[in-house]
Image 1 (spheres, one colour):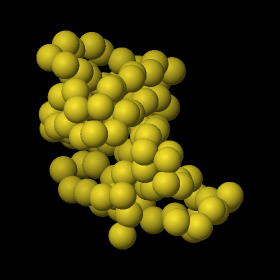
Image 2 (cartoon, helix red, strand yellow):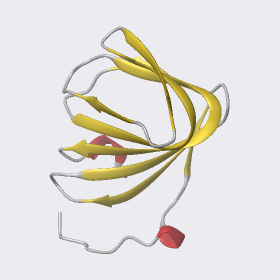
Image 3 (cartoon, one colour):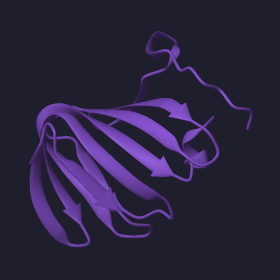
Length: 111
């Protein structure tokens, strides 16, 4: 992957994933990826695993996260860390936006 230093929001696609969830892939390279995820109230990010480490910063809204079987209600300004292969998911309680950071890059998200 060639290095790209600027990612303008106006040039990035907000992809509709269905179920009240939309995703915008922002800055990324081989080792790191930043993704903006928009949730409608009631939308569910089903429990899943992946081999990537992940940090999620809650930009807005309210979410009930489940990480490794433990649930926690989080709101704007809160952050999560998910180690590789830990089961995790979220239910959106109040419409909002998350910022997900992955290492390494989620190649499965790129077209």
